[in-house]
Length: 352
Image 1 (tube, helix red, strand yellow):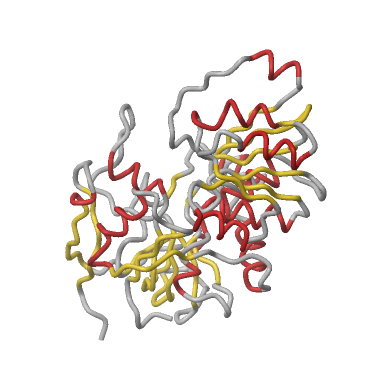
Image 2: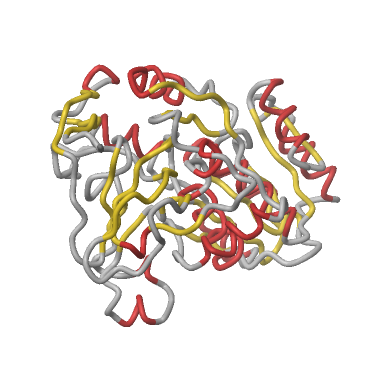
């Protein structure tokens, strides 16, 4: 018989990893149009760190269960739900929207006024059992395990939006991917290659540069070296980079604009090194450059991404897995920038 209580992770107040509390909670029941999922694993994103730390001027709905990504097995359906049937292996689509507005019905649900990211605006995936809208789970490809299934939702969706819809990458484009060992950048590097781009990457350690080469980067440079801009420009034949893919922000912006060709595109989804944009505006209009902000992506694209995962064309990069009891240590590893790919939290080893 299923147990009546489950373990969940909750954030009651902002702070360091020590504020992550593992608590008992009643086992949730799915309502109309919902499914219940027994979680096998969830994966961390830098969003989890921001929610845990808190952001000045941003109010989060505390207490909150963190986690945007996850994979598991459906174990119950709410009224009116025809599937996925119980026993189906699924991955989590990491955001919800109203499903009724013009943006949703036009396939750009990430522009919906009611767009809500799991683990940020509503309870997320760091729990033994979660209840989600049925539209927020999809079958996990047979060849992808739980750790892998928990590792691609938010990062690959974000990278796909950045490169496909925002930067409009086409075969032959030269793409520079910053911080290439992060979750979103390992996704971006692979997607750029899938789109036919020629890829350069930056990374700060030898191990991270080795990972970028393994994922197919044609050039890998140390962004801590003063010569990296010259290395990229020499490789590209001058300032001939078509697209810069970034989530670092202040530390990389000026040099990124220097390596872009005329008409180049700088696309970013975060600003982990600082939020202030400072640049010479003349460079933007003289060179006809585009600066493109991007958040998340269209949920429907995750079905295409999952298909490419199942075909072996894309793959989630898992750094290491921690048990649920060690989720604070998982946060510390991500926060210290030690990870090579995604940091995973195994929730139930019996879910496969």
